[in-house]
Length: 414
Ligand SMILES: [Zn+2]
Image (cartoon, rainbow, N blue to C red; front, side, top):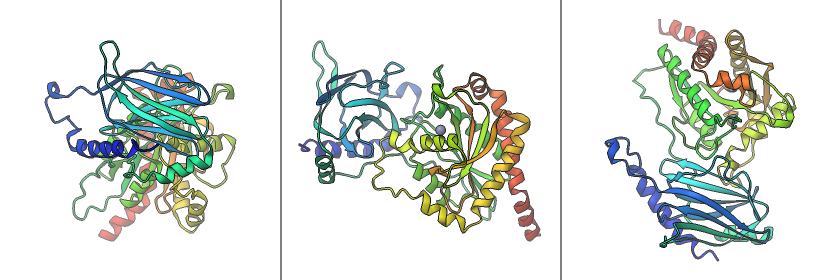
């Protein structure tokens, strides 16, 4: 049953690995940029026993298909493609496929994730040549199975390691003796994981990247800090990678940037909220939000079975360190500064079990800039003046946070 898997995975690994150095074509003249293969239509057919998933391709390409449990998903990895699909494609599935999404998983690699209604078997996965009246097509046939067979098939699949993200951005160069603190800005979501989506189509992943880029410029302007971002473009970075990035580079502060959205039936809310890590959420809304934000990896088709679900352990560790009180201190500063420039949520300081805030040695906060589901908030979130003012306020909170330490540092140097 899995005979096709290994050759395809091998081809994919080779093409991803081999394509990486060649993929960033920015250095070339724009006229030399090769046109990406594109996906022009998707169809799902069948029923709750057998379901066929078809994508129309502008040209043949290699892909790998594999299934993941908890929750059940089927992941299709392929070289980078352009998706030319209707806005709501994937929101409604059929048969064994509840819904699907697609996007960039790394530079040079695209991914499609099918959410399935239960354990499934990938019966066939192949690409058809174009014919005189049909385009090339990617076809995946799924059939229902039971959990035990599903898990057994998974352990048989010991193909090449699956890559889930590109290499994280490089840090800005550090001169010898540069003692300036490193601030890591973490724009949420990216690539296949779009985050919240406004009624009018704006995406959280784009709004938070813009904000983080503005904030980085503002912080760098002061010359007091080194600043790095977990992503600087539209690629996906797993939550654990974001945490690891801050820790491994010895960040002095980690700021994750998001923009929330309320489901239609949950009324209206407005304004910015600043979150820190806690085991028990400060209220139901904080719990809902942490759950939603923690789903990023599931959405992007990351295999979580290998990752310990260790927020609780980290909290024990965290309790023994100063990190927690530093995080709280910075969160209060941010709220204090935002008061004058941004709309604040009526309870602007909250806490919950956000995975991205779990570095035990890096003070970390998550700022929800506002609600993309609230018209007035969305107007602000997409406004350049508001962005500049709000970034300036956050930068002031950063100054406030580091002022005592920088003063101590220079006192020592003198
Ligand atoms: Zn988010």
